[in-house]
Amino acid sequence: MKLKTIVLLSLSVLSPAHAAMNHSRMIMDDKMMIMNANPDKLPQDCPKISENVDITIRAGHKHALKFAGKMFAFDQQEWNVKPCAKINITFINDDQIRHQLMVHGLPGYLYPDGMLHLELYGEGQLQASFIVPSQKKTYLVHCELPQHAEKGMKAQLKVDGGDGDLPSIPGISAPVNADSYSVEWTPNTWVTLAVCIVLGLALPTMIIINAARVKAMAVSLWAALKTRWNRRLG
Image 1 (cartoon, rainbow, N blue to C red):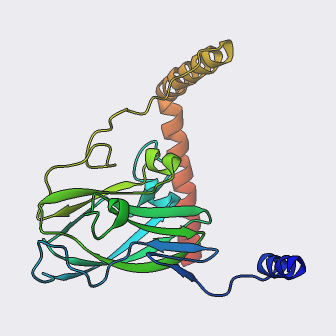
Image 2: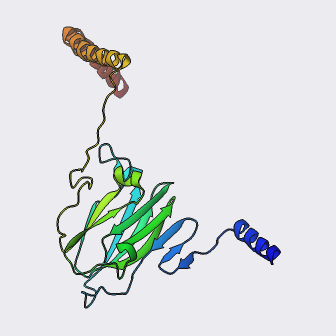
Image 3: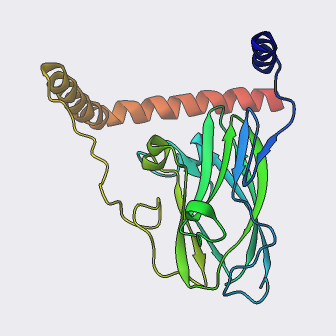
C-alpha cells in the first residue's frame, strides 16, 4: 500500500498537467484560473437578461504609460452596462508575468465571496461570463496582487450609471493616498541641480550673444545647399 502511494505521488509530480481541472466553481491549470463564472443563473432581482455585452480587457505594463507614476494598468478604466446584463469578458494578459482581473461586490448567493476572478500567468487570454443584478451600483475591478493594484491596475464597472466613482481609479478619480516622489538631497544631488541650472542659463545666453554669427552660418549653409542642388538639376 505504501509503495503504491509513493508511485502515485511520484507520477503526479513528474507528469505535466495537460487539461484544466474543474473544482466546482474553479477551473484552473498551470497557467490560468477562472473562479465563479456564471453564464446562465439569473440574480434574484432579474426576470431575464437585459443585454449581452462583450468586453475585451487587456492588462499590462504598456497600458500604464498614459498615467504618470503608474506601472501596471488595464487598457480601459470604466465600463457601463444595463441592469441584469450578461457580460462576456475576454481577458488578455500582454505581459510575461501574472495578472488578475477581479470584480468585487457581486451577490454572494451567486458568487462566493462576492467576486468573479480571472487569472493568467504570462501572455494569453481567458473568456468568462457573469450576470450583474439590477441594482444601480459601481463595482471595483482590479488585479488582486496588491503591488499591481496600487501601481495602477484598477477600474470600475457601472451598472445603470453606477452609484458614483470609486477612489483611486487612474484617470477617473483622485487617489486615497497620493504617490510621493521625494528627493534625497545629498551633495551629489545639489551638484547635479547646480550643473543643470548653469547649463540651462548658459546655452540660451550663448545663442543670443552669437545670434548674428549663427544666422550668418545658417545663411551660408543654405546657399551652399541651394548651389549644390541647382548643379544637380543643371
